[in-house]
Image (cartoon, rainbow, N blue to C red; front, side):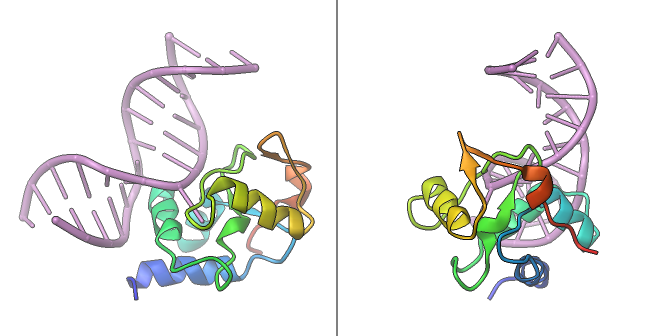
Length: 103
DNA sequence: AGCGTGACGAACT
DNA sequence: TAGTTCGCCACGC
């Protein structure tokens, strides 16, 4: 499929526990790059949702960010809600608690 | 081989 | 507090 870098990104996504979220910046750090935009681009090019939980990735601002599957952002929100991540007014509720980072 | 693009981020006004 | 600007860097043309 994609490039090595891409696969590393997707692999990083698989490590995100259900019901938790992380940020593009966190993934960038985990992969050892400063180009967070590159990560965003990589995630966006991922084949599709269920296999890789790309909906668990949100911007550091706690907002929802973007999504390419289904109806876009609304679908992303729906998926998060199903996992117990409350989303209110386009933002992740209790973002600090839901935030997950690579140990 | 060079240039623009982008599911972001942080600083600035 | 909100809107804008500049920086990050891998990828595709």
